[in-house]
Image (cartoon, rainbow, N blue to C red):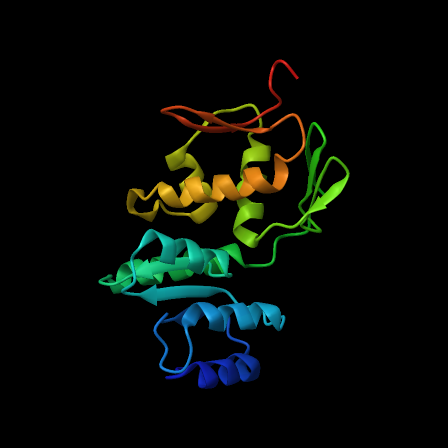
Length: 201
């Protein structure tokens, strides 16, 4: 199913409930970022891959922040696009039944089933990508993770080595969970990041 405008795309999403949407940012009647924001606001949950010539880091970050699952820049190969589609679809497959899991570090708690995060008794609102990033850090609490490891596990690919996207999301996490003491997100210069309670805490 194809659509040439944001209006037609929205109608198609509502009517056909597709497994995935491949979206150009430069729609003739609406910015693609705004289109996805409206889908999310209206509760229309559908995986989205942005496909665009806009390759600036701020555009990539914005696309992922508003609710995109991947961001592919032109030129691209069909093989690469198909591979990324498969990754996103696999990520959104219903998980097999498993026991409720809660990840805890100090006064930080993450519930994998409800997608709720609490720090020092206060609920923390995270985007889907921020949640995946925090979950991966919590699963490896105390272990220093390289930028490449985090990009591979959270985004399933390395953004072509564009580590600034990761740094931006680490900054988002720090603002949202490190308002309380002790700070938990730490940079290991020249290596990567680690989630841990400071030894002096």
